[in-house]
Amino acid sequence: MVTSEYERRIAARFAGFDQDGNGYIDREDFMAAAKALLAEFSTAARSDRGQSLYVGAEAFWQGMAGIADRDGDQRITREEFVTGAVKRLRDNPERFAEIARPFLHAALAVADTTGDGAVGVENTARVLRVLGVDGDVAAQAAAQLDTDGDGRIGEEEIVSAFARYFTVPE
Ligand code: CA
Ligand code: CA
Image (cartoon, rainbow, N blue to C red; front, top):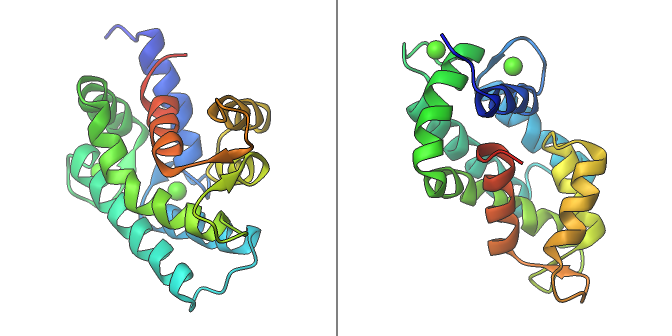
């Protein structure tokens, strides 16, 4: 089997999803990501925003499982991630944005500490870091998203950036 550079990049992203580092992606990893985001922004799990985040995390997990969990054991192995997720998401990156959107929408609501419907560059970088994007990459990505330089980033920008990071070679 020939492993392309693209597949190696996707395999590296596996670590971002495998939040607890036990070698496979499952529901617990998505719940851990939601919990970490709530802790980062001091938001209670029982709050409306906390509940929306958990609902979004569950939808994200179900979407990823539908794409990649080929043997249906509720775990996505590295091989399932590379062979399932890579092939399908490369052909259809919009699909990834679609399954990630409810979670990212809820995550931005948690990170919208000023309550005005957009998120600042620094809080966007904090979200990306909690979700497993490398620190330097997260800071650069957040700054680049703010194309008009007003320091505010909206949902469309972060959804497309997230999809790009996880599905397209740099
Ligand atoms: Ca895991
Ligand atoms: Ca599996």
